[in-house]
Image 1 (cartoon, rainbow, N blue to C red):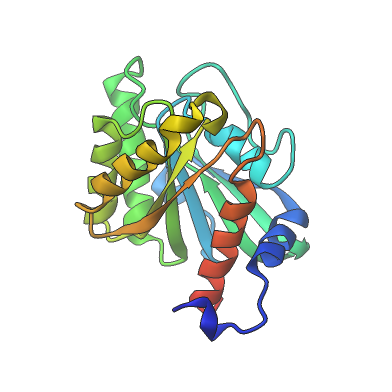
Image 2: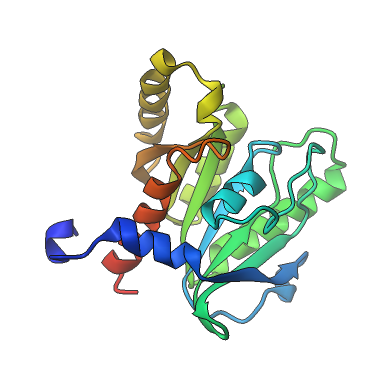
Length: 222
């Protein structure tokens, strides 16, 4: 559905307002039976450890410490739920910070527990509308990212790639990096065919991401 179906709608402003209101941590789940009851639409954020996921969530909501940032890989070990609302308790949407994948130093038991939790959430959550997979813009898509794409394909979950750390990539290399990612996504049926390049440091791409989320909700009638 194109923007022509929404005459007069300013999705840039709607995206800004969506993330400018109340936003706070609401729930953490380490097991699939510990998830909160389903409610408003959910968007989840996944990515390799240290890809800048917490920094992006903080930038998206214009908060300094909504999500914990750490230089220690594997810090996020639960599904962390954040509620967005114009005024509580009326939730407009939820954001979910998923455990980072590809952390080689974690034990096999811990990795399996994370994978079980992740797959259980992805397969059985009707309120989950899209997963944003963060990929380090300095390096592009890695094999561990491709494994995540395959998991999302198998779970039939819509997902979109967000490149991070734009400020650390030379300007002459940015478009080529985006095209490389799009070529990868062409092989994956559940992937949304657009890539947003962001920087949590400079704020580049953040307004575009907010706009995209607002437009997605409108297109879904939410």
